[in-house]
Image 1 (cartoon, helix red, strand yellow):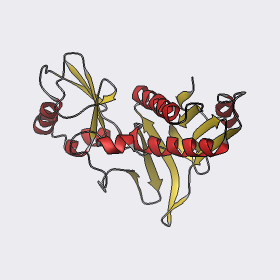
Image 2: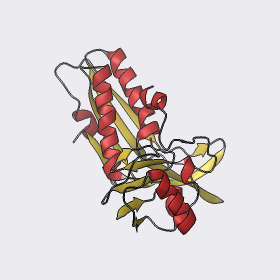
Image 3: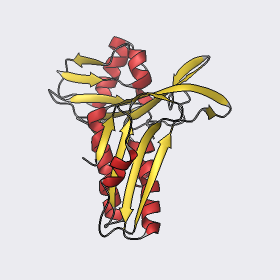
Image 4: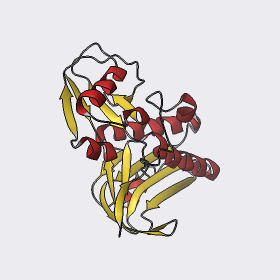
Length: 77
Length: 154
């Protein structure tokens, strides 16, 4: 199980702040595709992602128990 | 704890006290506050959200970057989240160094990095609506899913 977190406008677009997705051994790109196709969560291409609280590229392989957070362009400060 | 995310009003002196050092000849303090007018549009209030665990890690990372560039610097950063009113303090950065030029430069470095890598988002509320900042305009895109190396290192 992969835990997925949404923030800011993505949280509103997805209508939830977190969800669990059954997958393992696939990549972050696969997860984005799955969320787009099965859950109609769009615009994931334009945001960064973090795996276990560190920025990660699309080809990162996800393992059971990982937490993936989608990070829209930040606007702190 | 030199790097914090808080829901409470920030005590500026508390942040400054964390960087006091006998080796310091200067402490610079940056206080980021909530502005009423942006390009003529009137903000009623703001809401900040964060991915708190990662945000603290990224603030610590900024502190390490500053220590690499300015080895004698001491840094403390506190960012507030939740609902903030006009004039409220959103972020306080304190940096101490032996000489003033480094303290100014390192402090400026910290706020610019916060705006690049720390997962905190601002929502603006106006009379006629609300919007997460840094989103729909899509002026910042990450085709590879993360900031480019040069963005991370500049």
